View: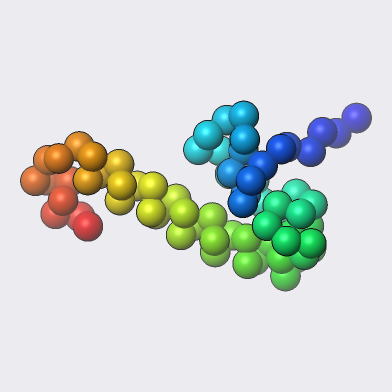
Length: 68
């Protein structure tokens, strides 16, 4: 039996930082269909980029800030 991951806005609730695409109602009712997956993929990419920028800023190094 397959299990559907519990997620909030495509991010796993139990495993932070793990993103799911294609699960029913991940972001919307369309998330399980191809056109919904495409929208979700864009949103996940933006969220991952945002988290990476935040992590780099938290390090406080000049080298990390150079990439922002």
